[in-house]
Image (cartoon, rainbow, N blue to C red; front, side):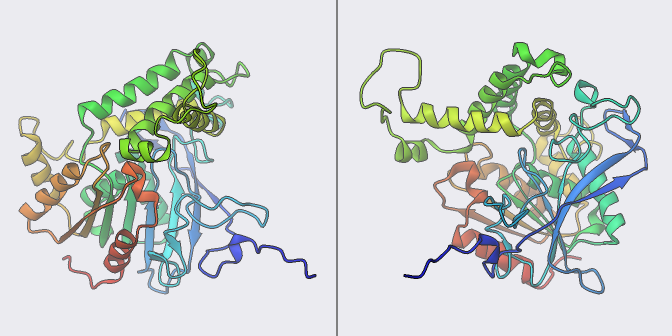
Length: 393
């Protein structure tokens, strides 16, 4: 009898394989929108594929709220968890690494290695903690431009992002219109609705009201706001998936098959949410969560480009007149966090300016999280867009 062993997933010919993150240090002081200054900062990145001679095949991946630089591949032969967009990036995949040089970075303010609340403040020599300043998507794009310059990439073939990543791609198209040829904006929005801001505030209050938050200095006290993070993630996770998906997966199923007449876990959906919250609380920083959700709330690409007395529709139309790239806008039928109607707002503003834009609304059961799934019509739309002739100016 021959003993067989399942090969490591990195040996899949479509995988980018084993990847090694890089940390790039920037000594240039960074003035943020809040008018505070970072004296220096680090960005952690991963790259996949090969940059061609004229550096025209580069694609920038912008991550969503809980994402990181680790978008594809594995960090070691013992690593069993692929990057968060591994089904999208690789040999022959929607973002084909045999054709493109792909860069994914971890934004400042995050907790995955780039400068943020868990890293050292060079001024004090101590962890930034609650002193780390509030940041915006515009700030992130500014650091991404500095990264582009460091890599010698004058113009990106495409900038791609889902959810909060799509907001970064949209901000790029407005702030630096001559530095990208294509923007892929997936499951995103031109700005948050009042309801979305409300969801974020409930999540933040869950953290801020946790006794172990310690005004943001929990690391100094050797603790962290576990309960707050769990609740924040539970609230957020409910908005990422649909009622139908929950019904299909859990229904009203009971873990023990009968009512226990108490406040511990009884329904399967309760167990699922607690598991998601518990796992998230072990892997994500509370100050980072506060910063990220505030960056979402503040996002408005029209700020600074139009007068305050304009209506939202006209302001977006005037702002997107600046753009020079070609757009692919993708929404999902069951996404109620950033509904298809929000994507249509972007499409309409671009069309009003006669900008080259393609739009696809994908029928998918996964809600807002659909952008993470390998859905044939979705992946084919992205693949075709990235390889089609450029139609912009």
